[in-house]
Length: 218
Image (cartoon, rainbow, N blue to C red):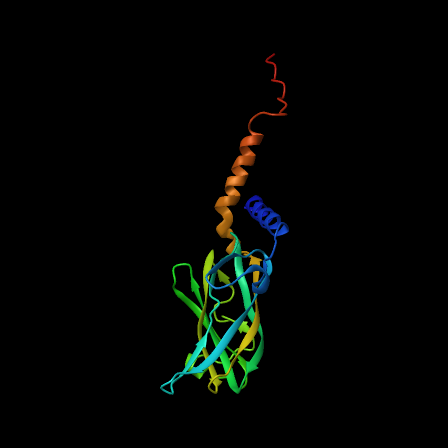
């Protein structure tokens, strides 16, 4: 068992040593919406901008519209999503009362995991989302989270705008990916055993082995 755990530790150490956390900026690399991102060990950051606008139709109806940056992401084998957070900066156009954003996290099959509501301007209006307002930490009820791939969704946005007004929100999402600690790392035992078996096979091939002289019968 000690050899097995040592092999697991070696695998995790080698994997994290070659980690290259993602840094993605929408202005530089293109639209985030409907994208896919392979996250790595460490703090991965995805930055973008959301736009909001209220338009008054000819019949007097006010229509609120917001673009959504939704994407899927994966994490490495033997890792877990330790935390997720968001920082925002809101820029208003016209008369703006408040703005809050709702986010959901789903697994790779689309099953709901957790959701968060983040006020970005003015008094929070998260009651409609049935969640208390967050200061920036996301999906805290589910962290830390093991898995392989996830779906990040902009579930809803609530804002108080007068007609022909709106704004935008610059944001940065941070995802911290860490190696799975023991005892969860025991899930990697099959891989570690395979490494040990390969090592044992090489040792048993006879290379560099010295046989002891046989005892003579008198």
